[in-house]
Image 1: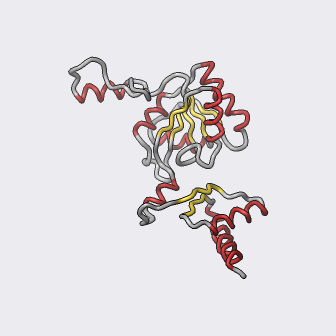
Image 2: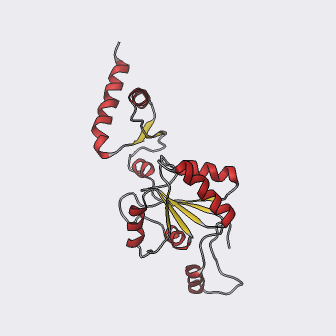
Image 3: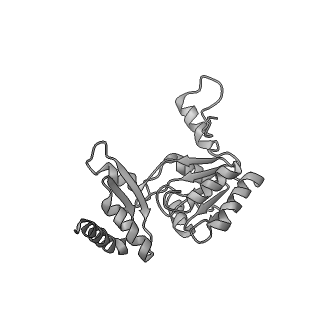
Length: 214
């Protein structure tokens, strides 16, 4: 086993085919660990082989939307998994419970968000902090990230950028954040729901105009 639980075979002399077969049947997870698993941001096939192995092998999956994650797993033939919810409305209760079950019961748990990498603009960040505080190992699995995907086709080399995540929907705070976005000299990346996109873009334009006014 490597430091992250991948199996590479025992002894010497195994062929590549034998090592691959051993890897396919060995567990890819460790007891008492919580895995932060990146999932697709649009296409169900945009997921790593390692992510699928971890989702297959963990004792439990904590999902932001259990129905959406269930559809993803069904697409990849991984039905019958045990789900619990972990989202913005219940994280204060679910985060300590997930940590307790990993630490005290030795369960291996995978955390997934609706799409992309958990812990980025979702309650995964609170679970990561709870893991650090309790000494529970949390393992990130790289994969899809909307912000990085967008930047990769921006055509800018050596681009400096700042990430705002989702903006507040509260009037005064949202206005303050829009002004920060408009005044940013680096590339600004933020997330927004499709039905609010035009409103947010207008807000940025208005904030920029207000800042430029004498």
